[in-house]
Image (cartoon, rainbow, N blue to C red; front, side, top):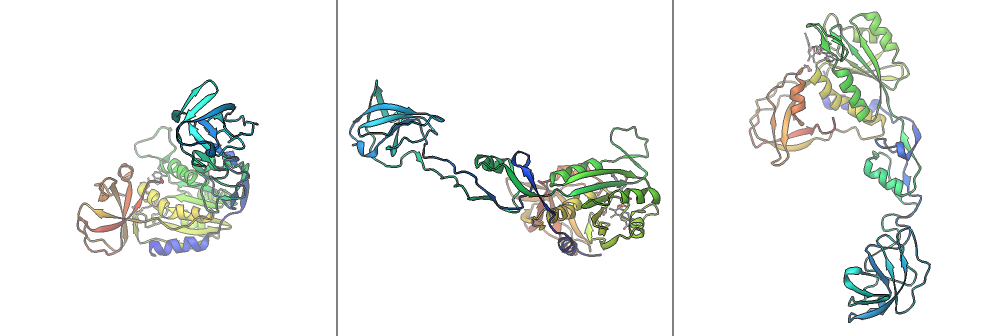
Amino acid sequence: MISLDDALQFIRSETRPLSVERVATMESVGRIVAKPVAAARTQPPFAASAMDGYAVRAQDLDGDGSELLVRGESAAGHASERLLQAGECQRISTGAPLPDGSDQIVIQENAKRQGDRLTTTDTPHPGRHIRRAGIDFTAGDTLLSPGNRITPRSLSLIVSAGVDTVDVYRRPQTGLLSTGDELVEPGASTRPDQIVNSLGPGLGALIRHWGGEPDYLGIARDDPGQVRSRLAAASGLDLLVTIGGASVGDHDHLRRVFADMGGELVFEKIAIKPGKPTWFGRLGGTHVLGLPGNPVSAMVMARLCLKPLMDGLLGQSADLPFLTARLSADLPANGPRENMIRAGLEARTGEIQPVSNQDSSALSALVVANALIRRPANAPAASAGDAVEYLPLDDM
Ligand SMILES: Nc1nc2c(c(=O)[nH]1)N[C@H]1C(S)=C(S)[C@@H](COP(=O)(O)OP(=O)(O)OC[C@H]3O[C@@H](n4cnc5c(N)ncnc54)[C@H](O)[C@@H]3O)O[C@H]1N2
Ligand code: MOO
């Protein structure tokens, strides 16, 4: 058995970023940037008013009731053609281009207008209420860098910059294979001795959420021939995730068939709870990650191993973002396996506490939890108030 850290080291050394493809900006949310994204235009493209009011020449203001002649208007989308002359001002709206000759905005609250006469007691402050051209970015500026995930926020940014396409890493094509005679697909009628294949949809959603393209390969029954044909169907994919059949039972054929087909094992068994039977290898050019069938074990190990594996394929850091919090309850000494305790982190107090049900089949407890407390192998008992490492579960 190896440690989680060693398993992650193997995963890192086995994975390389996938090839790069060009996608339309409008379709790019969730993708990982592979090449720097540069602005195709400057924003704002012109000096613009930040307020509704009047564009003036600062030198025309004396702070003592200056009187100006209102001539012309600059509205958003309708730039004024007029050059502002001495003693003149122009009506201007927020976001409208500054007329040539003006260098200050008087907001309308600070002015009194009668016909084409404007009086204001504003003092001269060149640049007041003006957005210079390019205060957001200038054409050619790098807006997004390799490794950045395109979010709704960054989509708005690159659309404003006139970027039509983005070079991103190809999505990992990820096969997903359930195994077991007891499994029934969601929605089908079930006998009392059957179990709904809940991990198929759950892991499929995680694969999509983490930037992959899931390819569901169905349920392989506990039959070596069927397991073989499903493994063969994964050839050509970047990654195959198998569920169940990872342990040592008489009906756990997966690992034997994988070896018969020439699969090369990188590691088997991690000294961790839950998730000990997790294994990792390669079949042809396809990475294979074997997750245990117990639902909590599978979900936890997906977070701990599948996410870093996919991150590696997507040119991302494969590190797990552990944080620190204070315990609000005592913990007993830990055994020889590192323990990932399902826990609730109270955001208000920053305190963390295990949820009551730690069974590796209890999805209800995983859903109540929002974090995993990491207890090192053989850790001594811990007391309320002690600092512990935890992993937030907010991205799953
Ligand atoms: N003698 C030993 N027995 C077990 C060991 C061991 O070391 N020695 N390890 C235990 C641990 S730890 C785990 S975790 C489980 C993992 O077993 P498998 O990966 O072989 O999983 P299965 O036996 O196929 O299933 C276990 C459990 O999970 C349910 N399951 C399976 N697939 C799904 C699915 N797609 N959706 C929902 N539920 C699923 C299955 O019905 C079983 O209840 O082994 C221990 N045994
Ligand atoms: O991890 Mo098994 O993963 O302890 O139920």
